[in-house]
Image (cartoon, rainbow, N blue to C red; front, side, top):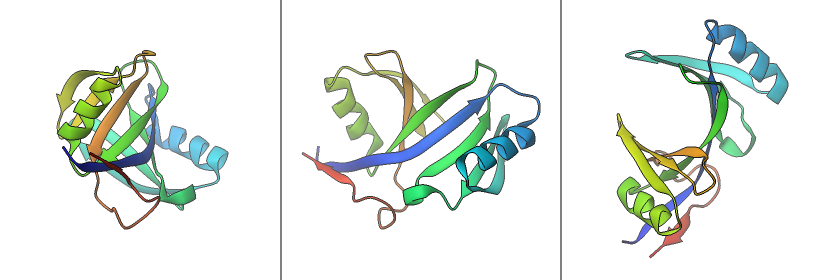
Length: 127
């Protein structure tokens, strides 16, 4: 199915009791400013502003070991997940409104809805 996708950004998963402290560290390390905090149920996120290339970068409080994961955004997340499966990825599960995927290399990443196609890099067109 024809659709578009591109790198959305990355999420810094933090196994920590102090996400504000983690956000301060990563803000200073990356040279970006701390933006909006969000709470969705048990999920807690802090976004960064003024990111290079308008990439979406945030810290997220998690129960699993700390790591960084990539988000790929698409105007059709199901079609993008299918395209990535053909490349060797597998779907791990649907969470809230995105697909958690695993690359053939074992890396976890997410396929999320594209919200601002006019900002950032031009999306790739896929048939």
